Image 1 (cartoon, protein in one colour):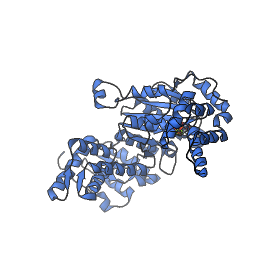
Image 2 (cartoon, rainbow, N blue to C red):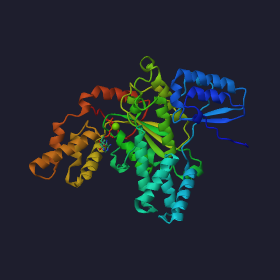
Image 3 (cartoon, rainbow, N blue to C red):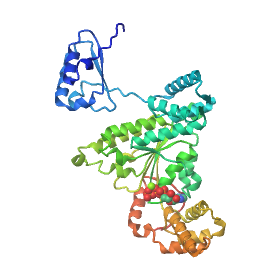
Image 4 (cartoon, protein in one colour):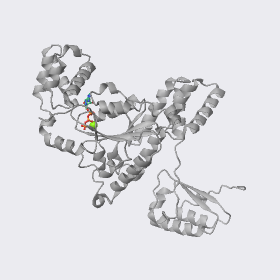
Length: 452
Ligand SMILES: Nc1ncnc2c1ncn2[C@@H]1O[C@H](COP(=O)(O)OP(=O)(O)OP(=O)(O)O)[C@@H](O)[C@H]1O
Ligand SMILES: [Mg+2]
Protein backbone atom coordinates (compact mmCIF):
# COMPACT_ATOMS: atom_id res chain seq x y z
CA UNK A 1 0.00 0.00 0.00
CA UNK A 2 1.47 3.29 -1.00
CA UNK A 3 0.36 6.82 -0.43
CA UNK A 4 -1.46 6.16 2.83
CA UNK A 5 -2.85 9.36 4.24
CA UNK A 6 -4.33 10.17 7.55
CA UNK A 7 -7.53 12.00 7.04
CA UNK A 8 -9.10 13.10 10.24
CA UNK A 9 -12.74 13.69 9.57
CA UNK A 10 -13.47 14.29 13.22
CA UNK A 11 -11.58 17.56 12.99
CA UNK A 12 -14.03 18.81 10.46
CA UNK A 13 -17.07 17.35 12.04
CA UNK A 14 -18.11 16.27 15.50
CA UNK A 15 -21.41 15.08 14.20
CA UNK A 16 -21.49 11.32 13.52
CA UNK A 17 -23.95 11.60 10.63
CA UNK A 18 -21.89 14.28 8.94
CA UNK A 19 -18.77 12.19 9.47
CA UNK A 20 -20.41 9.20 7.79
CA UNK A 21 -21.56 11.41 4.93
CA UNK A 22 -17.98 12.64 4.53
CA UNK A 23 -16.73 9.05 4.32
CA UNK A 24 -19.29 8.38 1.61
CA UNK A 25 -17.83 11.19 -0.44
CA UNK A 26 -14.26 9.89 -0.38
CA UNK A 27 -13.16 9.28 -3.93
CA UNK A 28 -9.86 7.41 -3.36
CA UNK A 29 -9.91 3.85 -2.01
CA UNK A 30 -9.54 4.40 1.74
CA UNK A 31 -9.38 2.63 5.08
CA UNK A 32 -11.28 4.67 7.62
CA UNK A 33 -10.84 3.96 11.31
CA UNK A 34 -13.61 5.13 13.62
CA UNK A 35 -12.46 5.20 17.21
CA UNK A 36 -14.97 5.12 20.04
CA UNK A 37 -17.86 5.28 17.64
CA UNK A 38 -19.93 2.64 19.45
CA UNK A 39 -21.90 5.07 21.69
CA UNK A 40 -23.34 6.66 18.55
CA UNK A 41 -24.71 3.34 17.38
CA UNK A 42 -27.49 3.72 19.90
CA UNK A 43 -29.07 6.39 17.75
CA UNK A 44 -31.46 5.09 15.07
CA UNK A 45 -30.45 7.95 12.76
CA UNK A 46 -26.79 6.95 12.95
CA UNK A 47 -27.67 3.30 12.34
CA UNK A 48 -29.68 4.34 9.29
CA UNK A 49 -26.77 6.45 8.01
CA UNK A 50 -24.37 3.52 8.57
CA UNK A 51 -26.58 1.21 6.56
CA UNK A 52 -26.69 3.65 3.70
CA UNK A 53 -22.95 4.14 3.88
CA UNK A 54 -22.42 0.37 3.82
CA UNK A 55 -24.56 0.20 0.67
CA UNK A 56 -22.65 3.05 -0.98
CA UNK A 57 -19.26 1.57 -0.11
CA UNK A 58 -20.07 -1.82 -1.65
CA UNK A 59 -19.07 -0.58 -5.08
CA UNK A 60 -15.87 1.08 -3.82
CA UNK A 61 -12.61 -0.04 -2.28
CA UNK A 62 -13.22 1.90 0.89
CA UNK A 63 -13.55 0.04 4.17
CA UNK A 64 -14.59 1.36 7.55
CA UNK A 65 -13.10 -0.13 10.71
CA UNK A 66 -14.79 0.43 14.04
CA UNK A 67 -12.68 0.04 17.16
CA UNK A 68 -14.75 -0.86 20.15
CA UNK A 69 -14.22 -2.49 23.54
CA UNK A 70 -17.45 -4.44 23.16
CA UNK A 71 -19.05 -6.02 20.12
CA UNK A 72 -22.47 -4.48 20.46
CA UNK A 73 -23.84 -4.32 16.96
CA UNK A 74 -27.36 -3.15 16.20
CA UNK A 75 -29.19 -5.98 14.43
CA UNK A 76 -29.81 -3.77 11.43
CA UNK A 77 -26.07 -3.72 10.83
CA UNK A 78 -25.20 -7.32 11.65
CA UNK A 79 -25.07 -8.34 8.00
CA UNK A 80 -22.86 -5.41 7.05
CA UNK A 81 -20.24 -5.82 9.76
CA UNK A 82 -17.70 -8.58 10.29
CA UNK A 83 -16.44 -8.88 13.85
CA UNK A 84 -12.77 -9.47 14.49
CA UNK A 85 -11.80 -10.34 18.04
CA UNK A 86 -8.41 -8.90 18.86
CA UNK A 87 -6.87 -11.43 21.20
CA UNK A 88 -4.98 -10.45 24.31
CA UNK A 89 -1.21 -10.38 23.87
CA UNK A 90 0.34 -13.83 23.80
CA UNK A 91 3.52 -15.05 25.42
CA UNK A 92 5.70 -13.78 22.57
CA UNK A 93 4.12 -10.30 22.57
CA UNK A 94 4.82 -10.04 26.27
CA UNK A 95 8.42 -11.20 25.79
CA UNK A 96 8.80 -8.41 23.26
CA UNK A 97 7.27 -5.89 25.64
CA UNK A 98 9.51 -6.96 28.49
CA UNK A 99 12.57 -6.74 26.23
CA UNK A 100 11.65 -3.21 25.24
CA UNK A 101 11.13 -2.15 28.82
CA UNK A 102 14.40 -3.75 29.89
CA UNK A 103 16.21 -1.96 27.05
CA UNK A 104 14.80 1.39 28.12
CA UNK A 105 15.63 0.74 31.75
CA UNK A 106 19.19 -0.31 30.91
CA UNK A 107 19.73 2.70 28.68
CA UNK A 108 18.63 5.20 31.27
CA UNK A 109 20.61 3.32 33.88
CA UNK A 110 17.62 3.95 36.04
CA UNK A 111 17.19 0.49 37.39
CA UNK A 112 18.72 -2.95 37.45
CA UNK A 113 17.38 -6.10 35.92
CA UNK A 114 18.23 -9.32 37.73
CA UNK A 115 16.27 -12.11 36.15
CA UNK A 116 17.31 -15.58 35.13
CA UNK A 117 15.74 -17.01 31.99
CA UNK A 118 13.44 -19.08 34.14
CA UNK A 119 12.39 -16.16 36.26
CA UNK A 120 11.76 -13.98 33.22
CA UNK A 121 9.50 -16.72 31.89
CA UNK A 122 7.59 -16.81 35.14
CA UNK A 123 7.28 -13.03 35.12
CA UNK A 124 5.82 -13.15 31.63
CA UNK A 125 3.45 -15.96 32.54
CA UNK A 126 2.33 -13.84 35.47
CA UNK A 127 1.39 -11.09 33.03
CA UNK A 128 -0.55 -13.35 30.69
CA UNK A 129 -4.19 -12.38 30.62
CA UNK A 130 -3.43 -8.66 30.78
CA UNK A 131 -3.71 -6.27 27.85
CA UNK A 132 -0.48 -4.82 26.52
CA UNK A 133 -0.91 -1.53 28.35
CA UNK A 134 -1.91 -3.28 31.57
CA UNK A 135 1.17 -5.46 31.32
CA UNK A 136 3.32 -2.42 30.63
CA UNK A 137 1.91 -0.75 33.73
CA UNK A 138 2.48 -3.85 35.81
CA UNK A 139 6.13 -4.17 34.69
CA UNK A 140 6.72 -0.45 35.16
CA UNK A 141 5.24 -0.54 38.65
CA UNK A 142 7.35 -3.56 39.51
CA UNK A 143 10.50 -1.66 38.50
CA UNK A 144 9.52 1.64 40.08
CA UNK A 145 8.78 -0.11 43.33
CA UNK A 146 12.39 -0.73 44.31
CA UNK A 147 14.52 0.15 41.31
CA UNK A 148 15.18 -3.45 40.41
CA UNK A 149 13.33 -6.00 38.34
CA UNK A 150 13.88 -9.42 39.91
CA UNK A 151 12.09 -12.57 40.92
CA UNK A 152 10.25 -10.80 43.75
CA UNK A 153 8.38 -8.87 41.09
CA UNK A 154 6.66 -12.00 39.79
CA UNK A 155 4.42 -11.68 42.82
CA UNK A 156 3.77 -8.01 42.16
CA UNK A 157 2.77 -8.66 38.58
CA UNK A 158 0.52 -11.49 39.72
CA UNK A 159 -1.10 -9.15 42.25
CA UNK A 160 -1.60 -6.59 39.53
CA UNK A 161 -3.28 -9.24 37.42
CA UNK A 162 -5.50 -10.21 40.34
CA UNK A 163 -6.64 -6.61 40.57
CA UNK A 164 -7.35 -6.33 36.87
CA UNK A 165 -9.18 -9.63 36.78
CA UNK A 166 -11.20 -8.68 39.84
CA UNK A 167 -12.15 -5.34 38.31
CA UNK A 168 -13.83 -7.19 35.48
CA UNK A 169 -16.22 -8.39 38.18
CA UNK A 170 -16.63 -11.82 36.60
CA UNK A 171 -13.56 -13.78 37.53
CA UNK A 172 -11.53 -13.93 40.68
CA UNK A 173 -8.21 -15.50 41.51
CA UNK A 174 -8.58 -17.79 44.48
CA UNK A 175 -5.75 -18.34 46.92
CA UNK A 176 -4.43 -21.86 46.94
CA UNK A 177 -4.43 -22.62 50.62
CA UNK A 178 -5.82 -26.15 50.33
CA UNK A 179 -4.09 -29.25 49.05
CA UNK A 180 -5.25 -32.78 48.35
CA UNK A 181 -3.94 -33.89 51.75
CA UNK A 182 -6.62 -31.70 53.33
CA UNK A 183 -9.36 -33.62 51.60
CA UNK A 184 -10.52 -36.63 53.58
CA UNK A 185 -11.64 -39.71 51.64
CA UNK A 186 -12.79 -39.40 48.02
CA UNK A 187 -10.17 -41.93 46.98
CA UNK A 188 -11.57 -42.59 43.52
CA UNK A 189 -11.59 -38.92 42.69
CA UNK A 190 -8.11 -38.47 44.10
CA UNK A 191 -6.68 -41.32 42.10
CA UNK A 192 -8.29 -39.95 38.94
CA UNK A 193 -6.51 -36.69 39.68
CA UNK A 194 -3.13 -38.14 40.57
CA UNK A 195 -3.32 -40.24 37.42
CA UNK A 196 -3.31 -36.97 35.52
CA UNK A 197 -0.49 -35.24 37.35
CA UNK A 198 1.65 -33.40 34.87
CA UNK A 199 -1.03 -33.58 32.22
CA UNK A 200 -0.65 -29.83 31.65
CA UNK A 201 3.13 -29.95 31.34
CA UNK A 202 5.20 -29.45 28.23
CA UNK A 203 6.38 -33.11 28.19
CA UNK A 204 2.75 -34.26 28.24
CA UNK A 205 2.03 -32.00 25.29
CA UNK A 206 5.00 -33.40 23.40
CA UNK A 207 3.90 -36.92 24.19
CA UNK A 208 0.64 -36.07 22.47
CA UNK A 209 -1.65 -36.16 25.48
CA UNK A 210 -4.72 -33.95 25.20
CA UNK A 211 -5.20 -31.64 28.18
CA UNK A 212 -7.95 -32.91 30.48
CA UNK A 213 -11.19 -30.99 29.95
CA UNK A 214 -12.73 -30.86 33.35
CA UNK A 215 -14.87 -32.41 36.03
CA UNK A 216 -18.39 -31.95 37.25
CA UNK A 217 -18.61 -32.57 40.99
CA UNK A 218 -22.08 -33.33 42.11
CA UNK A 219 -23.06 -34.08 45.65
CA UNK A 220 -24.34 -33.59 49.12
CA UNK A 221 -23.84 -30.19 50.73
CA UNK A 222 -20.71 -29.65 52.79
CA UNK A 223 -18.95 -32.81 51.65
CA UNK A 224 -15.97 -31.19 49.99
CA UNK A 225 -16.88 -30.11 46.46
CA UNK A 226 -15.53 -26.59 46.80
CA UNK A 227 -12.62 -27.87 48.86
CA UNK A 228 -11.70 -30.34 46.12
CA UNK A 229 -11.85 -27.66 43.43
CA UNK A 230 -9.22 -25.69 45.32
CA UNK A 231 -7.12 -28.76 46.04
CA UNK A 232 -7.01 -29.69 42.33
CA UNK A 233 -5.43 -26.37 41.33
CA UNK A 234 -2.91 -26.66 44.06
CA UNK A 235 -2.11 -30.31 43.27
CA UNK A 236 -1.42 -29.39 39.65
CA UNK A 237 0.26 -26.08 40.54
CA UNK A 238 -2.11 -24.13 38.31
CA UNK A 239 -3.75 -20.82 39.09
CA UNK A 240 -7.36 -21.07 40.18
CA UNK A 241 -9.93 -18.72 38.69
CA UNK A 242 -13.45 -18.66 39.99
CA UNK A 243 -16.16 -17.71 37.56
CA UNK A 244 -19.20 -16.07 39.06
CA UNK A 245 -21.99 -17.21 36.76
CA UNK A 246 -24.52 -15.13 38.64
CA UNK A 247 -22.62 -11.99 37.77
CA UNK A 248 -22.41 -12.96 34.12
CA UNK A 249 -26.14 -12.39 34.07
CA UNK A 250 -26.04 -9.19 36.05
CA UNK A 251 -27.12 -6.47 33.70
CA UNK A 252 -25.04 -4.00 35.69
CA UNK A 253 -21.87 -5.26 34.07
CA UNK A 254 -22.93 -5.37 30.46
CA UNK A 255 -24.48 -7.87 28.11
CA UNK A 256 -24.43 -11.40 29.45
CA UNK A 257 -23.10 -12.92 26.24
CA UNK A 258 -20.29 -10.42 26.11
CA UNK A 259 -19.52 -11.04 29.78
CA UNK A 260 -19.13 -14.75 29.19
CA UNK A 261 -16.94 -14.19 26.16
CA UNK A 262 -14.74 -11.87 28.16
CA UNK A 263 -14.43 -14.26 31.06
CA UNK A 264 -13.55 -17.14 28.73
CA UNK A 265 -11.02 -14.98 26.95
CA UNK A 266 -9.27 -14.07 30.17
CA UNK A 267 -9.28 -17.70 31.34
CA UNK A 268 -7.79 -18.89 28.06
CA UNK A 269 -5.13 -16.23 28.21
CA UNK A 270 -4.15 -17.14 31.73
CA UNK A 271 -4.10 -20.83 30.81
CA UNK A 272 -3.00 -23.36 31.74
CA UNK A 273 -5.42 -22.77 34.55
CA UNK A 274 -8.26 -24.30 36.54
CA UNK A 275 -11.56 -22.53 36.02
CA UNK A 276 -13.91 -23.14 38.89
CA UNK A 277 -17.62 -22.68 38.28
CA UNK A 278 -19.09 -23.07 41.72
CA UNK A 279 -22.76 -23.98 42.03
CA UNK A 280 -23.26 -24.04 38.30
CA UNK A 281 -26.96 -24.83 38.69
CA UNK A 282 -27.57 -21.48 40.35
CA UNK A 283 -26.14 -19.59 37.42
CA UNK A 284 -28.08 -21.71 34.99
CA UNK A 285 -31.36 -21.58 36.82
CA UNK A 286 -33.98 -20.87 34.23
CA UNK A 287 -31.74 -21.55 31.27
CA UNK A 288 -34.46 -23.76 29.89
CA UNK A 289 -37.84 -22.21 29.47
CA UNK A 290 -36.54 -18.83 30.44
CA UNK A 291 -37.57 -17.30 27.15
CA UNK A 292 -40.49 -15.64 28.85
CA UNK A 293 -38.51 -13.86 31.50
CA UNK A 294 -35.33 -12.78 29.77
CA UNK A 295 -36.04 -13.23 26.07
CA UNK A 296 -33.79 -16.27 25.95
CA UNK A 297 -30.61 -14.61 27.15
CA UNK A 298 -29.78 -17.27 29.74
CA UNK A 299 -30.48 -20.03 27.24
CA UNK A 300 -28.11 -18.39 24.76
CA UNK A 301 -25.41 -17.84 27.37
CA UNK A 302 -25.78 -21.42 28.51
CA UNK A 303 -25.54 -22.56 24.90
CA UNK A 304 -22.29 -20.67 24.42
CA UNK A 305 -20.93 -22.12 27.64
CA UNK A 306 -21.77 -25.65 26.47
CA UNK A 307 -20.18 -25.07 23.09
CA UNK A 308 -17.06 -23.76 24.71
CA UNK A 309 -16.90 -26.72 27.12
CA UNK A 310 -17.19 -29.07 24.19
CA UNK A 311 -14.80 -27.39 21.80
CA UNK A 312 -12.23 -25.56 23.85
CA UNK A 313 -8.65 -26.31 22.93
CA UNK A 314 -6.89 -24.02 25.41
CA UNK A 315 -5.71 -25.88 28.51
CA UNK A 316 -8.42 -24.62 30.83
CA UNK A 317 -9.50 -27.34 33.24
CA UNK A 318 -13.07 -26.66 34.28
CA UNK A 319 -14.26 -27.79 37.69
CA UNK A 320 -17.98 -27.25 38.01
CA UNK A 321 -19.82 -28.06 41.21
CA UNK A 322 -23.51 -28.57 41.82
CA UNK A 323 -25.75 -29.93 44.53
CA UNK A 324 -29.18 -29.72 43.01
CA UNK A 325 -29.90 -32.08 40.17
CA UNK A 326 -33.36 -30.76 39.33
CA UNK A 327 -31.81 -27.52 38.16
CA UNK A 328 -29.16 -29.19 36.01
CA UNK A 329 -29.92 -29.04 32.31
CA UNK A 330 -29.45 -32.55 30.82
CA UNK A 331 -27.26 -31.17 28.02
CA UNK A 332 -24.63 -30.37 30.60
CA UNK A 333 -24.30 -34.04 31.48
CA UNK A 334 -23.80 -35.24 27.95
CA UNK A 335 -20.51 -36.85 26.96
CA UNK A 336 -17.83 -34.52 25.80
CA UNK A 337 -18.48 -31.64 28.16
CA UNK A 338 -16.55 -33.06 31.09
CA UNK A 339 -14.10 -35.92 31.39
CA UNK A 340 -16.01 -37.32 34.30
CA UNK A 341 -18.96 -36.58 36.57
CA UNK A 342 -18.18 -37.52 40.16
CA UNK A 343 -20.75 -37.98 42.86
CA UNK A 344 -19.63 -36.93 46.33
CA UNK A 345 -21.71 -38.60 49.01
CA UNK A 346 -21.75 -38.21 52.78
CA UNK A 347 -18.47 -39.55 54.14
CA UNK A 348 -18.22 -43.22 55.14
CA UNK A 349 -16.98 -44.24 58.61
CA UNK A 350 -13.37 -44.44 57.45
CA UNK A 351 -13.68 -41.12 55.66
CA UNK A 352 -15.15 -39.42 58.70
CA UNK A 353 -12.22 -40.70 60.72
CA UNK A 354 -9.83 -39.11 58.28
CA UNK A 355 -11.77 -35.85 58.23
CA UNK A 356 -11.60 -35.69 62.04
CA UNK A 357 -7.86 -36.29 61.87
CA UNK A 358 -7.34 -33.59 59.23
CA UNK A 359 -9.29 -30.93 61.09
CA UNK A 360 -7.89 -31.76 64.53
CA UNK A 361 -4.42 -31.44 63.05
CA UNK A 362 -5.35 -28.22 61.24
CA UNK A 363 -6.11 -26.75 64.64
CA UNK A 364 -2.73 -27.80 65.96
CA UNK A 365 -3.95 -30.59 68.20
CA UNK A 366 -2.57 -34.11 68.24
CA UNK A 367 -5.07 -36.56 66.67
CA UNK A 368 -3.43 -39.40 68.66
CA UNK A 369 -5.01 -37.91 71.77
CA UNK A 370 -8.49 -38.51 70.35
CA UNK A 371 -10.46 -41.70 69.82
CA UNK A 372 -11.10 -41.11 66.14
CA UNK A 373 -13.13 -44.28 65.74
CA UNK A 374 -15.54 -43.28 68.47
CA UNK A 375 -15.88 -39.80 67.00
CA UNK A 376 -16.48 -41.26 63.57
CA UNK A 377 -19.18 -43.58 64.89
CA UNK A 378 -20.97 -40.77 66.70
CA UNK A 379 -20.74 -38.59 63.60
CA UNK A 380 -22.63 -40.99 61.37
CA UNK A 381 -24.64 -38.98 58.86
CA UNK A 382 -22.51 -35.84 59.36
CA UNK A 383 -20.94 -34.07 56.43
CA UNK A 384 -17.28 -33.03 56.37
CA UNK A 385 -18.32 -29.48 56.98
CA UNK A 386 -20.40 -30.50 60.02
CA UNK A 387 -17.50 -32.47 61.40
CA UNK A 388 -15.30 -29.41 61.09
CA UNK A 389 -17.95 -27.29 62.79
CA UNK A 390 -18.24 -29.78 65.66
CA UNK A 391 -14.51 -29.52 66.30
CA UNK A 392 -14.74 -25.74 66.35
CA UNK A 393 -17.77 -25.86 68.66
CA UNK A 394 -15.82 -28.25 70.90
CA UNK A 395 -12.99 -25.75 71.04
CA UNK A 396 -15.40 -23.05 72.20
CA UNK A 397 -16.66 -25.35 74.93
CA UNK A 398 -13.11 -26.10 76.06
CA UNK A 399 -12.06 -22.46 75.92
CA UNK A 400 -15.05 -21.40 78.05
CA UNK A 401 -13.99 -23.94 80.66
CA UNK A 402 -10.42 -22.74 80.51
CA UNK A 403 -9.43 -26.27 79.53
CA UNK A 404 -7.59 -27.89 76.62
CA UNK A 405 -9.71 -29.48 73.87
CA UNK A 406 -10.57 -33.10 74.63
CA UNK A 407 -12.58 -35.93 73.16
CA UNK A 408 -15.48 -35.09 75.50
CA UNK A 409 -15.80 -31.55 74.15
CA UNK A 410 -16.03 -32.73 70.57
CA UNK A 411 -18.46 -35.49 71.54
CA UNK A 412 -20.67 -32.99 73.34
CA UNK A 413 -20.62 -30.66 70.33
CA UNK A 414 -21.53 -33.55 68.03
CA UNK A 415 -24.45 -34.55 70.22
CA UNK A 416 -25.70 -31.00 70.35
CA UNK A 417 -25.89 -30.62 66.58
CA UNK A 418 -28.36 -32.20 64.27
CA UNK A 419 -26.82 -33.01 60.91
CA UNK A 420 -28.53 -31.82 57.78
CA UNK A 421 -28.84 -35.41 56.58
CA UNK A 422 -31.52 -36.12 59.18
CA UNK A 423 -33.73 -33.31 57.93
CA UNK A 424 -32.73 -33.68 54.30
CA UNK A 425 -32.77 -37.47 54.22
CA UNK A 426 -35.26 -37.64 51.40
CA UNK A 427 -33.40 -35.16 49.26
CA UNK A 428 -30.17 -37.04 49.72
CA UNK A 429 -31.84 -40.35 48.89
CA UNK A 430 -33.18 -38.84 45.69
CA UNK A 431 -29.79 -37.41 44.80
CA UNK A 432 -28.17 -40.82 45.32
CA UNK A 433 -30.77 -42.58 43.33
CA UNK A 434 -30.40 -40.20 40.44
CA UNK A 435 -26.62 -40.38 40.54
CA UNK A 436 -26.43 -44.15 40.49
CA UNK A 437 -26.25 -44.64 36.75
CA UNK A 438 -25.24 -41.19 35.70
CA UNK A 439 -22.16 -40.49 37.75
CA UNK A 440 -19.09 -42.12 39.14
CA UNK A 441 -18.75 -42.39 42.93
CA UNK A 442 -15.93 -40.25 44.30
CA UNK A 443 -15.20 -42.76 47.05
CA UNK A 444 -14.71 -46.48 47.01
CA UNK A 445 -16.38 -46.95 50.36
CA UNK A 446 -19.24 -49.37 50.60
CA UNK A 447 -22.10 -47.51 52.09
CA UNK A 448 -24.85 -49.00 54.14
CA UNK A 449 -27.87 -46.92 54.93
CA UNK A 450 -25.96 -43.87 56.05
CA UNK A 451 -28.85 -41.51 56.30
CA UNK A 452 -30.50 -41.92 59.65
N1 LIG B 1 -13.87 -34.60 52.60
C1 LIG B 1 -13.51 -33.57 53.37
N2 LIG B 1 -12.29 -33.56 53.95
C2 LIG B 1 -11.91 -32.55 54.75
N3 LIG B 1 -12.67 -31.49 55.01
C3 LIG B 1 -13.89 -31.43 54.48
C4 LIG B 1 -14.37 -32.46 53.63
N4 LIG B 1 -15.60 -32.13 53.22
C5 LIG B 1 -15.87 -30.93 53.78
N5 LIG B 1 -14.85 -30.50 54.55
C6 LIG B 1 -14.78 -29.24 55.31
O1 LIG B 1 -15.98 -28.55 55.17
C7 LIG B 1 -15.78 -27.30 54.52
C8 LIG B 1 -16.91 -27.05 53.56
O2 LIG B 1 -16.85 -27.96 52.51
P1 LIG B 1 -17.08 -27.53 51.00
O3 LIG B 1 -17.27 -26.07 50.93
O4 LIG B 1 -16.03 -28.10 50.15
O5 LIG B 1 -18.45 -28.24 50.74
P2 LIG B 1 -19.31 -28.27 49.40
O6 LIG B 1 -19.42 -29.70 49.02
O7 LIG B 1 -18.75 -27.35 48.42
O8 LIG B 1 -20.70 -27.77 49.95
P3 LIG B 1 -21.82 -26.88 49.26
O9 LIG B 1 -22.63 -27.78 48.43
O10 LIG B 1 -22.57 -26.35 50.44
O11 LIG B 1 -21.12 -25.82 48.48
C9 LIG B 1 -14.45 -27.42 53.82
O12 LIG B 1 -13.83 -26.17 53.70
C10 LIG B 1 -13.69 -28.34 54.74
O13 LIG B 1 -13.09 -27.62 55.77
MG1 LIG C 1 -19.39 -25.48 47.70
